[in-house]
Amino acid sequence: MTNTPKLAIVLLSYNSLELVKQFLPKIIEYTPKSDDYQIILVDNASVDDTQTFMKNNYPNIRVITLAENHGFTNGYVESLAQIEAKYYCLISSDIEVTPHFTEPIITLMEGDCNIAACQPKIMSWDRRNEFEYAGAAGGMIDHLGYPFARGRIIDQVEIDEGQYDNIQEVFWASGACMFVRADVYHKAGGLDNDYFAHMEEIDLCWRMKNMGYKIMFHPDAKVFHMGGFIIKYGSSAKVYRNHRNNLIMLLKNLPPYEGLWKIPLRFVMDFLTMIKMALDGNWKTIWAVSKAHQDFVFRFGKWHAKRIEAKKLWANRNHTGIYPHSMVWQYFVKKAKKFSDFNWTP
Image (cartoon, rainbow, N blue to C red; front, side, top):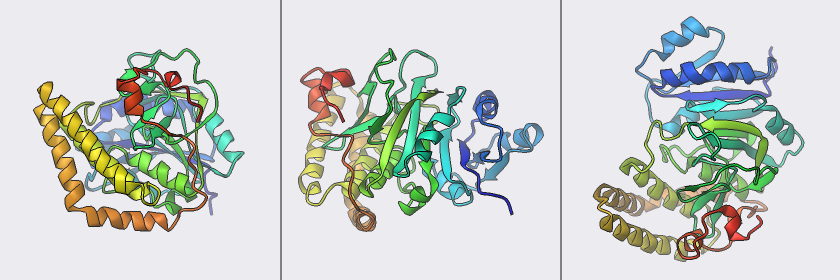
């Protein structure tokens, strides 16, 4: 009988053989050589030659093959049910890791059993001195449910000058590279398969925060993220999923009664966003936001049932990382373009 590994690094790939060729060798090189560490590639029903490549070049690495692609979330929902480990590292195929990307985070999580998840510093792959959009130096959220990050507000990305080189409790950890305690992941219900992609890691982190756990950022672990490889930034598909999934997330996780006014307010704010889209000539994105609203309203009963299930796990809810004001107001009216401009300590 073999011991349960301490960490399973789970690399999710969908038709990204070239990225696997480019980035898998560094994951192998920079992962401690121990039975406590495993690397697993999840082939999310790719139609390229990933299977053959892995068999011929990395026969000792476990490959989990999914018969159908039902999205980013399902890739992990199906595969993690088959993986035993104390911690998972969920990592996208477009991530380039650096030396010691695992050790600081595992050491931190081993020292505090109340830490459910942690992310490394996430930098841009092609602009190496800049933070990357998806996660940067740890995710936050404002009281209306708009996510942002230390190092990235809306579309303003900061240069890394060491300003966030502190171990920090945050609100959410990026799904591009997230370390998560396996038992807490499963207890929380895992990633929500109805999301398909986008906001799924924020929803998971919010549920774990509502259970009383902490989400952390560690600056001594660093990765570079290519970003937008599967669904391009600004595409109508991304706009649709971001708006719909954000509304679902609010309904599932907001404190009692807050959704009664915050969700309608979000519809109003989305309408103002659609006016701006019209002025800019972005008709496809207007359709995407409208479709997101329809999906949320027409399937409201389904989304509300998710809230009922999630609420059963609420205990000592942790509010750290929730900005008590409007990030949108700060950005567009107060012209706050950096996290430090908010004059707020989480």
